[in-house]
Length: 198
Image 1 (cartoon, one colour):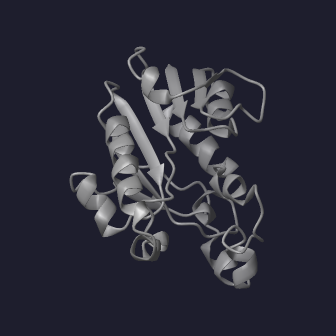
Image 2: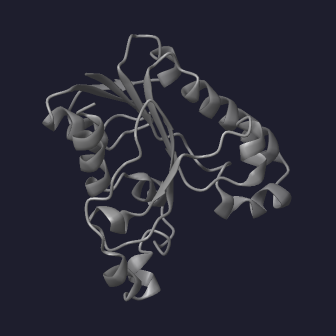
């Protein structure tokens, strides 16, 4: 299949699909971290190039429930929320048969702007071989829910917060947001193996 992995600079999901024999291309405003097929630019400019599947990871900064408090502390974020939701909606409405949009749990103001479209599935890294928690939502169209590949919940919950929520507790740094946004390898592999066989 011809697969577009939007808003991905890490190359993890792209390379997982390539490993399964697909023609996958990542697209992001940033250059790719790992050499491979990559479009550096605005993904909205390439949505109409007859893709078989879109997997997108749009920025969650103004949409995530964990950051809703900042809407009330910084009024400028309300307009940024509108722009973020418009971008999200354009990805969901892309002329592509199979779509997965990935994001954290959204706040109610985001869901309103997403025309009430709620996520189809919520997963955790521990369902895919990682002893960590990070609630991740999928908005799915033309794709089945992703089946867990391993269940490490018991082991994960026995770990201290700082270990099982490693990404949440990362020290402030210029690259913190990048470190938090990379797709877990176990999830990328599951996507490629399960959705790559449809």
